[in-house]
Image 1 (spheres, helix red, strand yellow):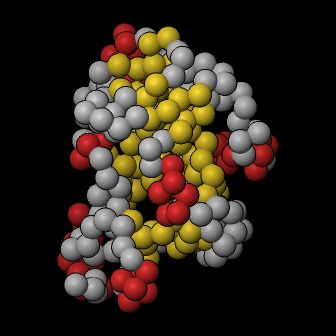
Image 2 (image 1 turned 135 degrees about the horizontal axis):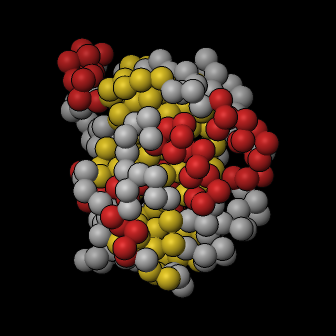
Image 3 (image 1 turned 60 degrees about the vertical axis):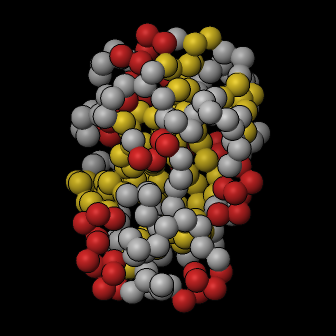
Length: 251
């Protein structure tokens, strides 16, 4: 079944919710000061590296989209990993975004910036895995322009779609500007297209209960996600499980 505009209209409240607008100008300035190199493998040598079992799929679904990971998790979303750069970013992110949204640091499952170069796209897809059903997805444009297309597709379609379906699918654009905060139902199909200059958005996935464990990664750690019943990440770091109950203001 091909999605129609009436489909997405009738389900829009389940697809995306506009929450508020925040002042993200300080975050924007810091990203500009860091430059595009901060999103490259070379530029992130002082961060940690995560090789996911979904890496190949992500490369296909998000061509020319580079990420700066600050928090990630295993597929269950219960084992959380703090990347080295989080310490540098957390004061600014807390004051500008996390505290105003009343999100507990210990409940954040994934936190990352995504840099979309001119002409890049996040192709229509829906996120999968146990972590999706237990988290809230927050989407905030930081650096953007009128030629960024943030789109939702009918709730009747799920999963990654073949090119023929994508070609015939009708989408609705969600207007967004710098600092606009949305809660996105990423279990439904969505897409982003960049038809202008560089675009950077912030993604926060947070759960209503704290993580079971939080591991602080060290500079240069190489982590691999292994499939299986527990879908753990394997890396050489010290696990600090008591961070899972951290309250706002303690980090």
